[in-house]
Length: 289
Ligand code: HEM
Ligand code: HEM
Image 1 (cartoon, protein in one colour):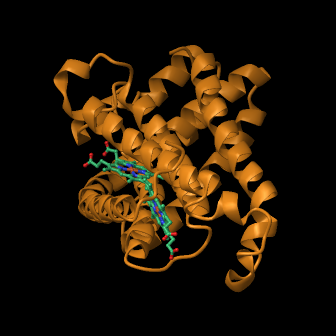
Image 2 (cartoon, helix red, strand yellow):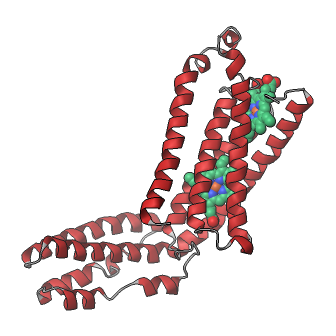
Image 3 (cartoon, helix red, strand yellow):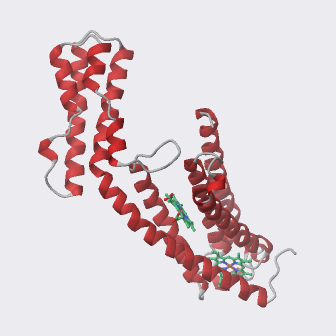
């Protein structure tokens, strides 16, 4: 997928999620805002109640979306025969798309009435969704190959360039500027101590100060705007790699624990949903068929 088609892919998914949500809110607000006792008399009750053609449909389509979103990603990730079917990270984006749209539809299926044993399925869905957002954050902290495989510490270290050589050979900078720029991209002894949170916090401000110093230095050299931007980009890349290297082991461990939490909630949701569907079928609910 080229960069442009990837942007298009993400934009189309985002537009679908946003417009579906706006439409559901727009057409449903009057009904969902009505109290439980009075809903029965609302003109949209027949359509939007959990067993109505629309409400029931939201439940079926939403569940189907989640099922496709989860199984397609797991199959692509685990089955070797599909290893060449697009990049894993694009499948993860598709997983996130369907597993965001699915829960939104299921939320409207419940008509904001969370009763009975099926509410455990609902709250498990909310838990998987929220843990998914946290997992995504951890996921992007771990450097990966283009294919989506986690890189080892030594592979990440190999990504680091010799910034000093690059700027010395390609730009006309004073010796002092080269040394300041090189230093700003090295790990700082002053922020090594403390726990991960205080270290991250302090390092953030140290890095910002360094980037400001680099900008100041670049202004003192006779560089074109384009050259200054190129050097700044290099510096920012190196600083970001430093941060990732420092946090790599912590993030890899966190991600392992995260998997242990994400999967059981997904399973609880699925099992109770199956029971819920079986019960509704037993009671004779058939949707439009
Ligand atoms: C994770 C997926 C799902 C969740 C969390 C969920 C949740 C709920 C909730 C909270 C209700 C309202 C219960 C009440 O009135 O107190 C409900 C009702 C209902 N659901 Fe689902 N549902 C899901 C999927 C489905 C699916 C896939 C179907 C159909 C195949 C379905 C069919 C129904 C029906 C027919 C009702 C109305 C039952 C009645 O009025 O007695 N649901 N669901
Ligand atoms: C109710 C909705 C969701 C369900 C049922 C669900 C379920 C799953 C399952 C079963 C996996 C595979 C775990 C494994 O491979 O061991 C997974 C992976 C993942 N999901 Fe979700 N998910 C949902 C929503 C989300 C959302 C909203 C996000 C992000 C915003 C997300 C982000 C992720 C990430 C980052 C992974 C890990 C990918 C990897 O390790 O390769 N999920 N999800």
